[in-house]
Image (cartoon, rainbow, N blue to C red; front, side, top):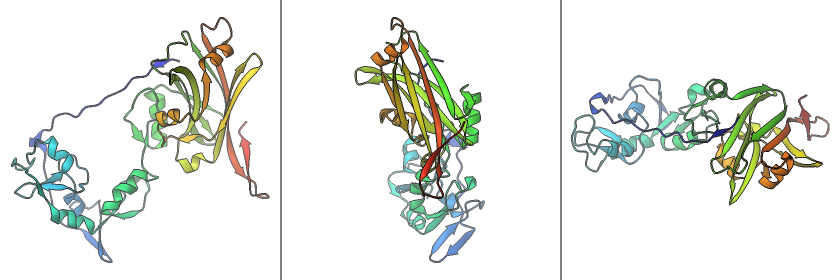
Length: 314
């Protein structure tokens, strides 16, 4: 399976100011010590006051307002051509300092509470936490495009199978064959992705060709469909060879929290120089024929010695 990589670029439609409405009210406040805890599921909460009426994201300083007191975030201020989306008055450069001050006193639940996060944070710390929250959705690990899909692991498995037509396999050992008729064509990265179900977890096996400096190379690596802390419980090995020679790579699978490009550019995987790849392919070196074998291991705690021993799934 060989495909050319491509980039999917999305664009924002024009903003229909007639459809933008703002409903700002104070209610449903629960006081805890000296701070205000906001119940985000309340229909009319302070959280709604801090919600931009255009993009519906939480507003952070600088928060802008028009002469009539309607607010919006700094990003959307330029999107609406400096016109208030509520009353159509010119926005100017008026800061809503009172609302910014109110935000300092608030504590809010993580926006991923519906996925299981129970943490509560001061308003201005909430954004930093959410960027690293263990419950935040995962990006699609598909390497052929910047796919915008996000979700939990079961959703992504279905998405990869149905939308990207990715091959799904069960088992902790694999035998991966890659054939390319013209191995000199690496300007546009060619790649493959296979998903394995092993130890009740999912792993993505990537294989692609790209230029490392001016030299064309091939690379294979494994990513774990979960967080980095979980990925450390596993290890994997990759092997490629022929004619009495072989290359072996052993490592820990990277979490899909790290993008495909980040893993590739860090060279964290089995890298095969083109001349070596052609040697393994045999023949007249005009066609690439590589067979990569590998296995996934789980590190199991030894109750006697307190050390990890590999437990390989058969």
